Figure (cartoon, helix red, strand yellow):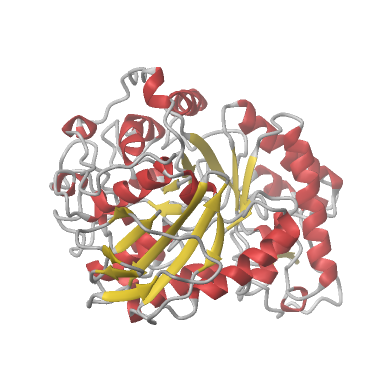
Length: 522
């Protein structure tokens, strides 16, 4: 039987979680704390912007370790670290050394300490694996222009008849000069593509993955997963390119499983339709659901369901046809490459709350981008999407990172200190919703079926697992909405189990949901 938690329960964060960050050892967690059911929610961290423990203004791995208890309190069960390898760029998506840590972030020992402390708290750790390309400052690429170098064939070089003006599948110039030669770099010239037709490249990348698993990583977020072989516009819909991508990721999976058969792989596959994402679910555990992210934000902004439920039915049917019965999905609202959700919603807090509630009641394992739970804003260019996390009201407080200036829109109110004790804050809403997933097995692990809504201002779905069914209903608008619960063939839902605000009620076979409120019925 599902345990009922009072809907008025407040998830407030202890003041101790904001103690000044340091590299001091993290206290052990009692076994009872680590035994709570996982939420299945992941949290994306840009280490540079997270917590600074040595006073240089740049976040570091010890800072991630220092705030594990914040993440535990929030309820997440996994963290994704954006690139931590040595790199000449601030973002790290051009790697020079796959077997080390960016010295600005710390050391391999710091990483091992982080993973050990995270595992003690029941938190998994995955890292960005950027292996479509290297940095042009990689020792491999520096040696590659010499045709006699063993690294020459690790990259792709233009032939005498190559169209050097060709565009790439990523929308930029494909070919770049290196002396009298030209090499393939589908993103920029600073990111030369590796040649996966070369067995030595494939073997090296598997070796790098195995190395990080042995350091304590639980898996990887695979950057640009579709672009291993989708290099040019004509590759995008080519079955041959897709087949080669899948063959590589299957080979990669086998190589990692030799070290850890439970390795978790989630892929960045930037495609507009679920049918394009589904094939990657054979070698990978999940792919980021880019089409769904846009639809959830559009629904929250417009206050209309826009057919979200039926779209999800079709999406999960496509996924299950490839990946089996369990729904393998990685839903999210935004990430480090996209404008912040709060900015996309023009600062409307009610719409932000609605978007969060929809995300965190979906199947799969949802992802949150750091600061999203505070309502952090950010619009392009990219550095503005990756601003420092605000812990204290003051940006000069110990632990705050200062490598990038903070936008005025992300003022003192957009901080953990300001929101932790406010029961109505966005932070506490995220905490509440994430904890729902830990408490209700059907909400975390259950299947999905769209439920007929009585209004286009409502979105509803049924989640079912072996323990039973729950009905999730979101009111997207500013007026109370009602809907019938006597749907033929559906279970009888007669009790309000959870709600994000007071006032939801069942009268006979009719549910009444207050403005901008989400409810779970049993």
